Image 1 (cartoon, rainbow, N blue to C red):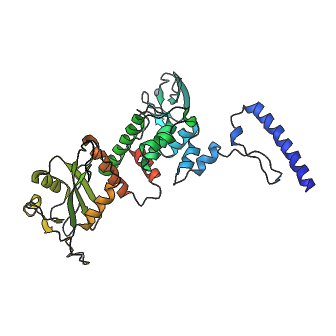
Image 2: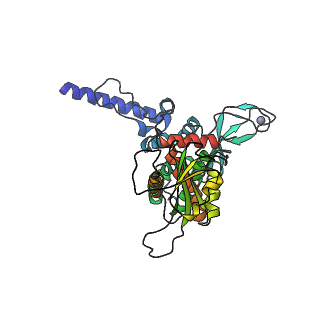
Image 3: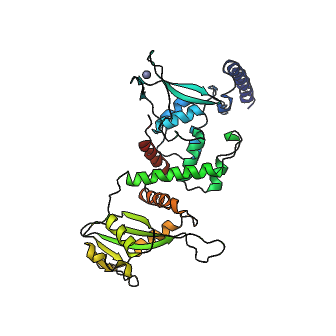
Length: 366
Ligand SMILES: [Zn+2]
């Protein structure tokens, strides 16, 4: 027992001396990452827990909040993390002379330090920010805050939570503004929309021998209207029983023209469409579809003769839980895209990594 104490005392002194020598040599920056070995092992070389090299090899296909924080401590860490997930380019071709560039350097612009590719060509010497045309291009907040807010969006954190987690000592004692969060969340919803439609707006669901359940729902309505009037948005929802594909399309007015317009655009001809009994759907058979009127009251286990719209109703009600009650008209498409994207990606191993991959695809950089 005594021996062990002595040995530990000796080792502690040795570690202290080593540590002081190292600090003199390197400055004090990595003092926080050092751990003292407490099991009496002779190897007392302090470990730097998150050495960049270690982390680079250890990037995971699942990124949780703690891991994200560890990966984004410094600007250099953020850069490596973003390059790993394709959010920032690792190499580029000089946009002036076409030379292939790999090396990054830090340039100071005002108070900020920016990572730039610097052209090696002596007659060119162009400098290009690594953030050009990437997810961070227009962003006024730093990479760390941006990544954490993006994580907050994917995890459906509300405004207060997002502000709370991106303010304070880890962020130079600055408080994130409401606008910053809402702007970034809006940007994220655009990613969801792009991911779903990918610029191709002519997609349809259903087909011959496929069944699509259709319903009209309204978002933003309160059951007991108290206080200020809330704007309601009518949305046509359709879901294909066989393929599980679905659409949510907002309409201007609850009119026959608007509803049929959505059906023609989003449902393939020849599809069996099941709706509730309503005059809005009277002309569906005239448009090349087979129409059945729902009999929601009777539960028929046989799918083929099941004329209910229970599936679409259940989908809508589960999605409504995540829809804020006071959505603006101009934002409704973004919210619907987000809900659909979440539905489509619900089985992914890590939703955040899936989202980052989507961002990388849409904003490849230079
Ligand atoms: Zn060049």
